[in-house]
Structures are given as C-alpha cells and as structure tokens.
Image (cartoon, rainbow, N blue to C red; front, top):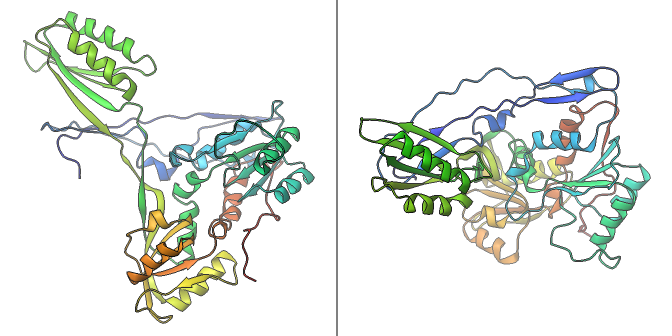
Length: 423
C-alpha cells in the first residue's frame, strides 16, 4: 500500500491512423483499446514521505469505434502498417523486461505483406512451410532470436533460420509475453477453458511512465523561476519539461516539475547549486500505475465449480489434447471439487508460486515445484510447454484478419507442434 501524498494526472491521447488504398483513401481514427483505456500509460501516481493534499483532475472520454480495414481496402499492406496493427492488439510495452519481442528480422528490401504465417515456434519444418507458401511475415510467439549473438553461422539452428529468413526476404516478429499479459490474450484464453468465472491477474502489469520523479521547490520571483527552468531544460533534453506554478502568497512562487530517471541527478544538482538562498527542494518518487486486466497469469473463481475429473476433460478439449500430466494435491481425488483455478501459459511455476487455488494449469513445472504445490493440497495439470499456448493462434488469427485487407492471407502453421509427445 502506498503511503504519503498521491497525485493523479491524466492525459488523453488522440491517435490518428491513415491507411492508403489503391483505389480509394480511408482515414480512420482508431480507439485506444478498451483494455488499456482504463489505465493509460499517462497516469502518474506520486508518492513521498511527506503529507500533501492530492491534486485532482477530470477526464472526459469521447465514444470511439474500431474499423475493419478488410471491408474497405483491397491492396496489400506495408510491413510497418502490419506492425502498427499488431501493436494495437498487444502493445509490446506489456512484455516482460527480460523478453526479446517485436520485429526480430527485417528484410533489407521491403515488400508488401500478402501472406502472414502464425506459429508458436519457428522450426525448420515451419520455415519450409513459410517458404513454400511465399510467406512475407512470420509471427512466431516464441522469439527465435533471444540471446545476443556474435555471429551468423550455419552450425546454430536458430541462426540458420534467421539467415534463411533474410535470404527469402521474410520478416519475423515475436510478441511472446506481450500476448501473455494483454487482456484477452493467451492466459485469458487458457483460463477460459474451464468456463466463466471471476478472473483476476496474478502478476499485475504496470504502466510505463517517461517521467519518473517529481521535484518541488520555491523561488522568490518570476525572474528567478525563469532562470532555474532554463537550466533544468538542459538537464532533460530527451523529454518535455512539465511544470506547474502556484503563488499561495505574495512572497514565494511554488514550483512543481516532473523529470525522467536519467535527468534526476543533474536536475537535483542544478537546483542545489543554484545561488538562490531561498530555494527549498523536495523529491517525490513517481510510481508506475497498474494496468487493470493486464499482467502475467490468471486466477478464476468459477461460477460453476466442477470435479477435478471434469476439469481435466474440459482442459483436454480446450487444448485439443488426448493426454495431460496430473499431480493430485494432498488429500485430493478425481471427485474433489475445483472452485478456483490458477493458470500461466508456458512455464508458469514462478507466477503460480504461493497462489492459493484448487488447481494449477500450466505447460511445465519442475519435479520439486510440483511437489511443493501438491504438499499444499493443490492439483497440478501439465500440458507440455507450447501446448498451453498454441491454441491461442487460431483465436489471434481471427482478431488479426478482421483488421487487415482481404488481400492479406493470415494462416496458422500446420507444421508447428510441441517437441514432446506421449508414446
């Protein structure tokens, strides 16, 4: 829980997106996705050890509409236009800091995007498939390039795939944890397999804020203020200096500015060395605001509790699998009731750790992680890593296709599969 003073500032951004077609021009203003609108990255929460009266402001929203480009445009799209659509569906800012997401391979000579292939993993078989269909863009959920590379050689299978993509002029994009985090993404799809319920996020996503600190100080005159502000602008050339001024009495001018993390030290040094003896300084930390509905993992309180046996069948059907791995929680049976379900696509032990639920669903957990959950009475269902993610590709294909012209084909890979199978 945050202590001290808290100030909330809102900024409503107006976005304009223009799509030029071969026969007619369509100008649209896309809405900020509803899932992000309630917690825009422009929100700022200020906290400090001081007590202060919060500042308030109002926000008025105008009705917005989504447009389907396919209904109006027949021509192909440029790669940068497709990337803009992908960003609208799942902002890359939602990805984990350790992840490697976004455009990973970009051909030197761009060409219109006519065919897009969705895959969970980019393998040799999937690349063969992409080349056979003259694919222009591969959207690989897992990033085929993750760790820094010092050379591109044929001995490394991932580097070999990158070389093949460059030679075939195929772009590669990876969304990975941005798809996991976004509302309506992989984890919401996964938990939905158990039926409707009250869903919450396990690891809350936080909004990014370009301004990370708030500095408050007083000066005696407007002339003195102008001099200080000119010096501060030089400290933070990468962002716009935001400040507010109030004069509660006739003796002093109260000033409040926000600055980026990189500009904090030079800004403080500037204020401390200022030759005005009347200047006083307070530093407040700008906390990143939560983005409701976005984040890693999901917990669902089911509207209709089911037995463990029924839950297993529902998950099999949802994932299209004939087998799952089950670890019964201590004191549990197949007829035990499942009221709460915690899920995390892929390798979810770190997200699920310590979460109280009747059932964990994820792709993989280590032996000891499973033992820890079982000892606490929690049942564990494991589907293998990519099997907990792959089914979302078909869902995303529909979301993407309606936002692209009819001339752009979006396909789900038929060669993509989990490397592990039950024999």
